[in-house]
Length: 262
Image 1 (tube, rainbow, N blue to C red):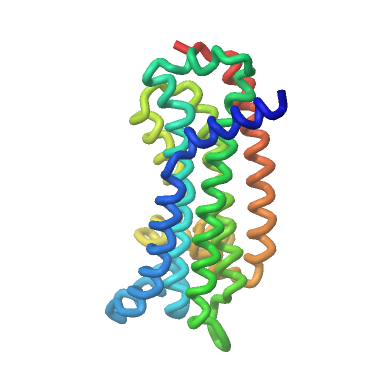
Image 2: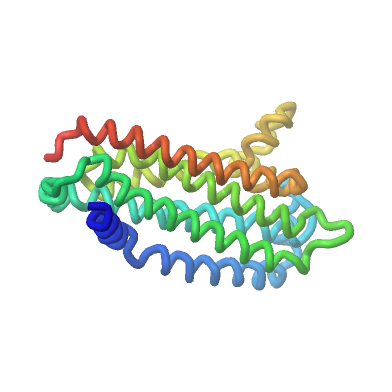
């Protein structure tokens, strides 16, 4: 029985994950390398503008700010694509009832499909974080505002954030019957945490007198401001994301049990 269940989980994981994580990992590493190579070649005025706009200092900080967004984007949308394939596609093509006709619970089906997707997104984010930490090394040292450990920790925080949002995304996707609607929900969910960074860029005056709020919600830049704290925070955030993933699967299983399949 256990061998059969393991085989079932492997088959479901293979279907749900597909080729997207490998492609995301390949694209992600290339993106990290190109960002580190091209930003130093941009006009000095462009990098100076980024430093002024986000209250950072040094070429390494400008590089990291761009790298962090790339990690967040690819880790999240790699997982979002997998969740669409795992949860929305069967309902859209009317095959969900057939899939659930097997002698397994809906909770087991959900775990078998969603768990590997969240794990794949974590792998993509962690790999990009490691690559970022290695490539930023030439820009660290005496007088630098960034460090290798801080870059790695910050990448892990963004990876954890992506996994956490994917865990939240599971529940609404159990109700969605259209992939376009699902991607719209995913995009809005992804966008919300980075909106304060856009506010800092275009309306920095809104943070006047609200420095503590700015330090808390302007993601990416605040990781650079508090670079020394990021290694520990990255580990904690990743652990919290795994706990949240488990909680989302438990909640999702309960919602799924009460969801009509048609």
